Image 1 (cartoon, rainbow, N blue to C red):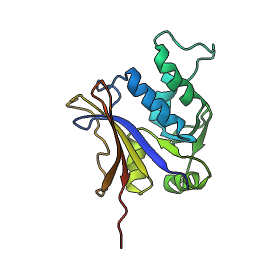
Image 2: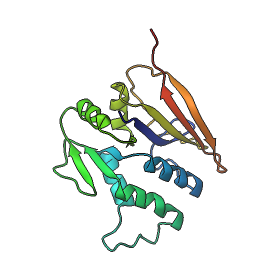
Image 3: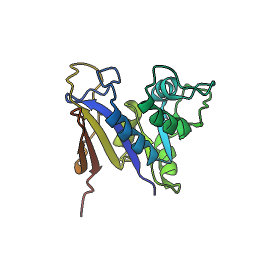
Length: 189
């Protein structure tokens, strides 16, 4: 069974909104690129899919936009090529190497996890909360930014039950960002 990894930028006070001062630097973009490369596919909800597509989809011209620094291109290319599954009840169709996921999200993600491969990546805020509540996330990766946002959506707000995690990896970046990788601990009988 391939693992489902939830990865996101988060501030020290738990804010996970992309506009909360979480601008990526070269080191964190290299980290995100390697995270994406570990996944056979990504799973996004509608909002995250549309946000990521508007920022990271290769333009029809084939030329990346001027705002995209050279060090952001490997991430853009990795995400652009990735197979994508989009969970949505409102979209009638998707493209950008994507397929629409309908019906029971828990069953759909469980089926995706049972396919052969190295792993799945999920990003965003709302969908990962639902998947965490269902116990489907096998690994949590947080890039903790040295920022206090003071507002915005917070990480996994509304989680029904506490999930105990064990730290399996930690990496500090020159910028003060700390990448932390956790796995849920399984209750032993």
